[in-house]
Image (cartoon, helix red, strand yellow):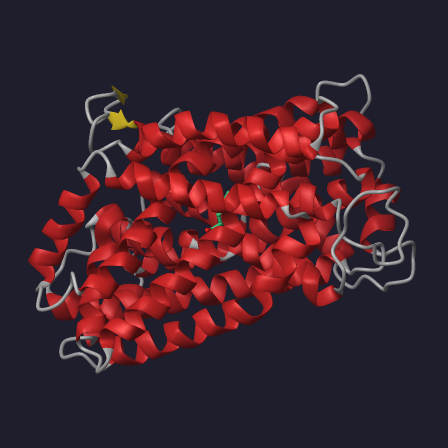
Amino acid sequence: MSGFDFSGRDSFGSRLGVIAAAAGSAVGLGNIWRFPYVLGENGGGAFLIIYLLIIFAIGIPVMMSELVIGRRSQRNPVGAFRTLAPGKPWFLVGMMGIVAAFMILAFYTAVAGWTLEYIYQTLIGGFNGKNSAELATMFESFRSESLRPALWFSIFLVATAGIVLGGVRKGIEKSTKILMPLLLILLIVLCIKSLTLPGAGKGVEFLFKPDFSKITGTTVLMALGQAFFSLSIGMGTLITYGSYIPRDNNLAATAVQVSMVDLIIAIFAGIAIFPAVFAFGISPESGESLTFIVLPGIFQQITGGMAFAFAFFFLLAIAALTSTISVLEVIVAYFSEQLNISRRKAIIIATASMFVLGISASLSWGLMRDVKLFNLNIFDLFNFTTANILLPLGGLLIVAFLAWFLPGGDTLDELSNGGTLKLKYYRLFRFLIKFIAPVAIALVFLNGLGLVKF
Ligand code: TRP
């Protein structure tokens, strides 16, 4: 323990440990796989501007709110609401988070499995000499197989469970501090390579020059969903992590720093991907396959590219791992604290049920390709519903809880560490969580889902 009284709960050891763990949760496939393809499908530069606005006006306030709820209550997301609002239905927000956690872990671990396949391909020279069209075919045929995606998924899930079993501090803090900066360095090298490809300028324009005529209700909904997904907010990950954060940590500063790291990595991923997309003549609207087609294409242009590709996909897998452990941790904290079972048992139950859900998701283009709801396969259904519906709805209720239910003094006390920190932006924060964030989320929702039209 770190010298703070956590009545026996595990906790993060140091300030850097807190940032590393929260940033480890935030930075992952959401930045490098999801952000580029969602941006590519939703208007490029115009999407980026809306995304930035959402991060600052909604994302950071929601993240701060989650950390406040977590550290105040010292509980998992369900227990947190039960403790802070006994006898009230607020705990249902936590329940919704647990449901979201299952769905996210299922499809996210499937994608993490794809990174393992790509590590393997760098070792056997599977990308060598392939052009973009061949790389696209390679990805599609891998994804529509029935054994390999499920196998890689299973390996990744077991690795995740193993680390969560090792405990919060030992498992999460250590790996992140060294490996994340390394990933950033490789990403910057990729950016430089991508920017110097012939025809790269068009990609830069696509990413940074907004064409506002491309903005629709769906664009804004997708940007909102992507922001929540990338920051790991709206389902209680940061309530759970907040409950492990020492009393003297500055929660507002942590939220801002983590959000900035997350944003920067996403933008670098965009700079690595889009110039190459246009240089190679790939459609920016290639969807979930975009990153997996473009990156191997760039590696081929680099001397020693396959060693580089190996390192990159390895670090990407680690970044995904620090995210999957944060999602599994939510489920495990809930099971063990609310159902009063050991962490070990909780991990076994959670992992076993994840096998069923996740294998189904990972076979969404293989064995399960005909299982569809609203014309979406299992993977797409989980992906869409969590990011665009459950997380924003969770975020809306979380800020509403702080704004309208929790006594204002409690929030102030958490954010100022009992009055020892001077808060410069507290009134702005209250304004954002009271009015801007809930109203904006509600409007984006109603409009994006086609319930109301502006
Ligand atoms: N934010 C992570 C990423 O971008 C994924 C993730 C981890 C997540 N925990 C989450 C997404 C909680 C939503 C909610 O890769």
